[in-house]
Length: 180
Image (cartoon, rainbow, N blue to C red; front, top):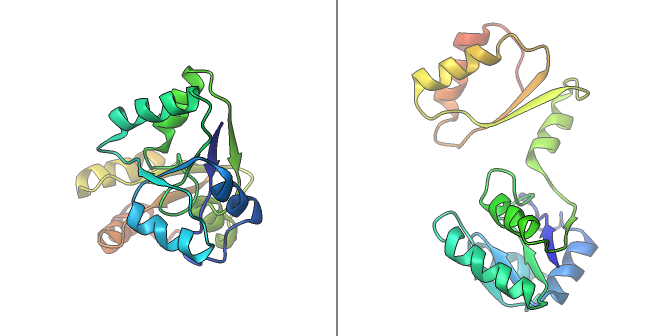
């Protein structure tokens, strides 16, 4: 079984009891950065072996993980923070598991996009998640222009080193529209 396990976004206490139990009982944990994940695992006395699974090794490691799953091993997939498969390479191993008819399940927990949506106070009955905006200003502005006509709440992720230029472009394209 492939367990897709949500991990805390910032506060290590934001983990579910089911996630802790799953991480303790699987045969292997696949994670983006073993150094980062060890902090969480040490906090909860989880001694399950770790293996890295990230953008630059996903092709080779994905095949290895599928082979282990086919041999009957249970593997937990975690990201550095939040729900695996959302803007990280987790979706690749999830697709491989589906293609190979490997059973999989989600252990729910924190998800930054849903937390942001709810905390915004904006309408949540219809929303669009755009992930990360393009890094270059012209591409970012063009993407924002395409989305400007939507009546839905629009959610973006942005890196800390690009937040100011991104907000300037949002202001340029959206004008006085309230943002959160």
